[in-house]
Length: 322
Ligand code: CDP
View 1: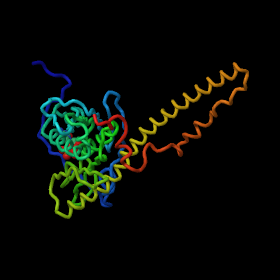
View 2: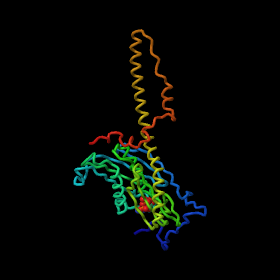
View 3: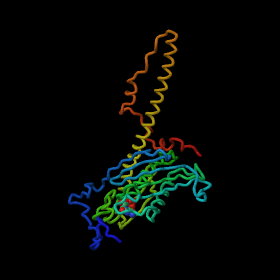
View 4: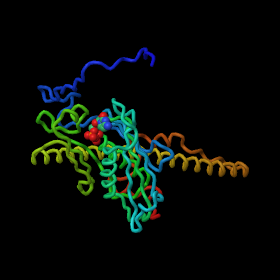
């Protein structure tokens, strides 16, 4: 074998990573957050054209894309249930999503996350409305930095609504844990690696039901209760961000509808005007060009759905029983 120029030889002894100080003297975390502070979170609904529903999420340094299909025929067929539909969630981490190359394909961890996420969604999707079918949720983690199961579940909820899947409510997910003997919300990567415990959780905000609760590490009973409480508080904030993503998506839809209606109205008016001209009648004044701007001023943009969660459960084609 020839010499491999430019390739660094592997030499020296392995040095385990050194635990950084996770909290400074002011109680601030490595990224400057307070104990109960979430990493920045943004969600966008309907980012894919081929999927029935989709969402893209960035949460801290996590990047997650979700595509939803269904209700559709089950493959393999023996998984189909005659009395109700099934929800199949597949969580996958891209090979380039972590700093060490991740072996592509399913591993034990991704199978576990897929299973717990599927079970969480079975609690909200009205599966009895579409027997013998499946709703398939594909969670693709593009960049991972701790909390990816929570990020995936949170994004998948938005994608399910975008697909028009009939649901009781969205599922919201967040984790909290313990670092340097202190309970903190939404662990980052170093906190997850060097911390004492991690408690990912998912809830249905409108009912308060907990649909996912896991724990890694050790906590006292009181600390676990504190972690749950922190997660519930955070989930309420995250729920608003999910809803905002949907509102943005649906206001655009409304805008287009209005524009089309306006176009139709103009056409009708042109037709009327032409008729009158031929008859020698006075032309009707055209539609007020400023009206559109006024109607759609940001402050006045109509909400796509009311505060009632029920409004967006029942949107689009998925409402059908089929
Ligand atoms: O991502 P989540 O916190 O839900 O799950 P985890 O099993 O606690 O993993 C924590 C983090 O470890 C992930 O978010 C990744 O950043 C990292 N990880 C990794 O680097 N390589 C893997 N094969 C799995 C996870």
